Length: 163
Image (tube, rainbow, N blue to C red; front, side, top):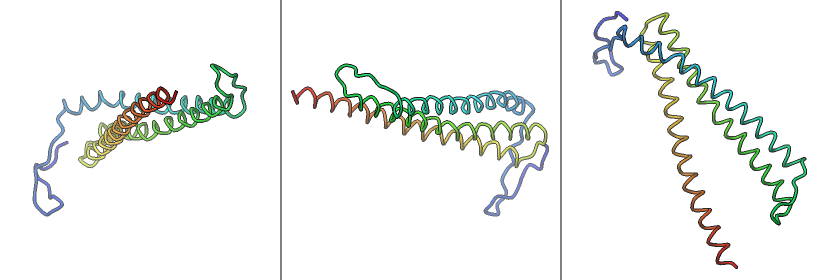
């Protein structure tokens, strides 16, 4: 990327342009196949999770759930339906991550072909979107685990002292 060393900022001031060196381009080129692979992996994971969810949903709605450990059969059906819906939801959460990585890999391909600042900025924007999304999912997952822990603790204490 051979451009002027300064460009106009949004506020009218002039700031330095960061040039992408051949080594930097090489690192981005080496990142592209991994981003593409992981994006495809996200899509495949979403499909498999959705298929498992549909199977659990079908078993819960249509299947025969035998009584086990003294539980009512409707509990097994409800568990199948809830599990199926949860798997479908989890599969749906994989799709945006795959889209962001796929776009990032595509922007890196464009950057290799046409070295412009705009394409580099677009690649970095897609990468930022991916990491923001994954960070939000990680935070939600952590909160869900903490909630599940306290819910299990409460239910354990409740059933122990209710006897």
